[in-house]
Length: 179
Image (cartoon, rainbow, N blue to C red; front, side, top):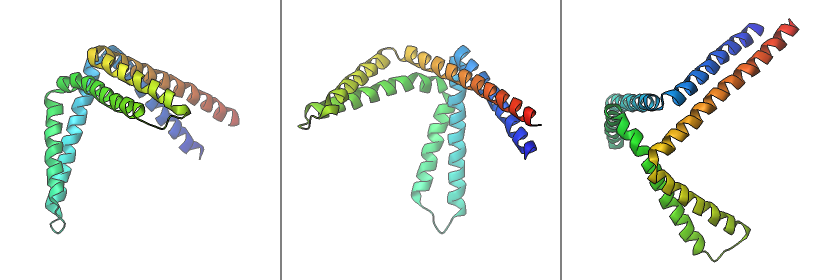
């Protein structure tokens, strides 16, 4: 049992170090890290498409046209992500801003047209307006917002990794005391 627990701790140490390294790379090399992640996601989509085609070819009795169609969509999206990750990275914040604006505008319209005005109505309206403002900010400054989010994500990974290492150190000292 102790040996199993020590192996678990060792693997957690590796994951903590990976978290710290990944977070540091996200902070230091945001563009390269995101391009790598987008390309990786693209290759995953291509692999999913290949699996769908193989599944379609193997299962002759239950061939559904949707399987082949989803494989084609996955393949196209995957190749777009692999071929031009920078375009995807640049478009993502813009799309995020548009989604925030449209969703917030719909929420505001729904709230203003509502006849039910309970205690949550005012708070809901305030949050909908804040979301609309954030959507406009994201749309007007997409690269700055993307950079800020990546720095926050990187910092979170680094803090998480160090927290894991401190926790694992405490566990190890407890195990050594019991031995």
